Length: 154
Image (cartoon, rainbow, N blue to C red; front, top):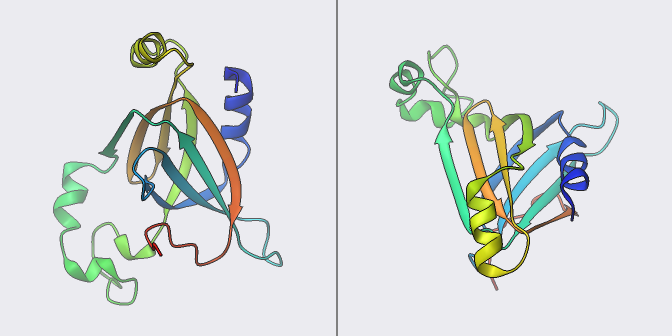
C-alpha cells in the first residue's frame, strides 16, 4: 500500500473510539480496534486496523503526571464507582481517537525497509490517553463483530 493510500485509510474514521490495541495472539501484527459512530440510529460498527509485520510498537501515556497521580484509585477502573472522583476514568473502556499520521521520512522505517527488502512505514496514532507509534509494512482494515475478543484462542 503506498503512502497516500495509507494516509487516506487512516483518516477515514477520525470520529471514533479506540476500544483495543495490542499485538495479535501470534505476536507479529499489531491491531487497533475502533468503534465507529454512524449516528444514534445506526448499529455499532467495530473496525480492526491490522498493522502487518509490525517490527516496532511504542505506547506512551498522553496524560500528564498530575493526571496520572490523580488516576491511581482502583475505583476509576469502573464508570459506576468513578462518579465524583477526580482523575482519568479508565473504566470508560475506550479512548477518543484524535488522529493518525504517517511519518514518511522515518529513519526506523527506512532502516527496516533496507534490511528486510520490503516497504515499511511509521504511523503515529494519538488518543486522549495514549500515543502509539508503529513501524509496519502493510495495513488491512476489516469489520469485526460486536464482542470481538482478540485474546480468546481456541
